[in-house]
Image 1 (tube, rainbow, N blue to C red):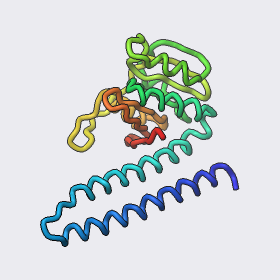
Image 2: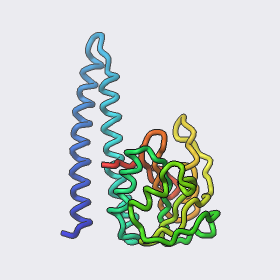
Image 3: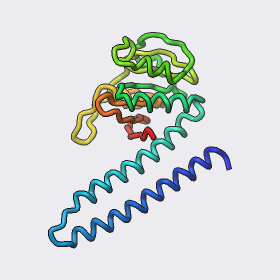
Image 4: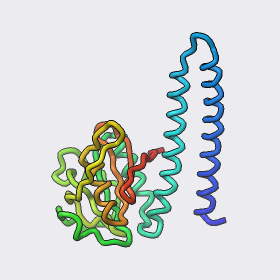
Length: 203
């Protein structure tokens, strides 16, 4: 069994476990609804949390699948995103795939450095002149930082998306690039692909 096949089986197993929990929570909710003076808001919260875990687990798997043949720096990228998330340091990282994005962005500062998690963390450290805008990654190198990306005009449910998230969606609407976003307000991580935004677990 290859690594990708093993990973796929592990993801399927984890999602199956979450679905079993979701079924159990659904049954608890049914009992709550039928009971007198019952309140099933807690069950709703539990189900929402489980659905979030399912989506995040699937997102993590697809993220690796989308990036596998374009960069070997999965571990460094994961470490950097986890550290940025834990510190609530906002970040926007664009990973170029088959389509060049150079003509789609307003180029910031050329970096031309080997990809390391510590370098990414330092670039997105609050107050660093390069922390605003998007970082462009090509293969195993950081090409540039502080790039200005095209913005999408979208809303997420009833909430208006911030500039980083709109930029992540915008660049993926016009190319096959993948964009990772860390929210400085919540520390939550998402990735954009094909013009859609997906939550991503940092576990």
